Image 1 (cartoon, helix red, strand yellow):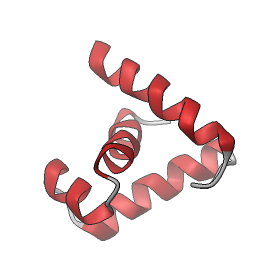
Image 2 (spheres, one colour):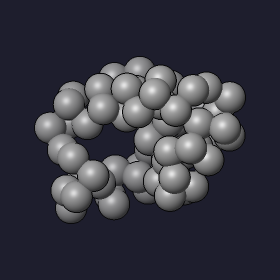
Image 3 (cartoon, one colour):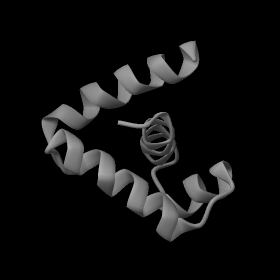
Image 4 (spheres, helix red, strand yellow):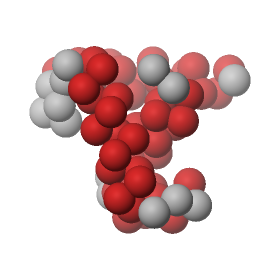
Length: 66
């Protein structure tokens, strides 16, 4: 799991948009989608998983501390 994947996931969750999150992170939308997909594969969870809401808050807290 890479920090950039966590930041990407948190940005998408906060912005509720891959396009806005990509703009915020200064990367392309396809690159952002790929990063989020890799993280989901590592976690074994998709966007609709109940784990996602909990993971978003944990990832936000981790990103703030780093």
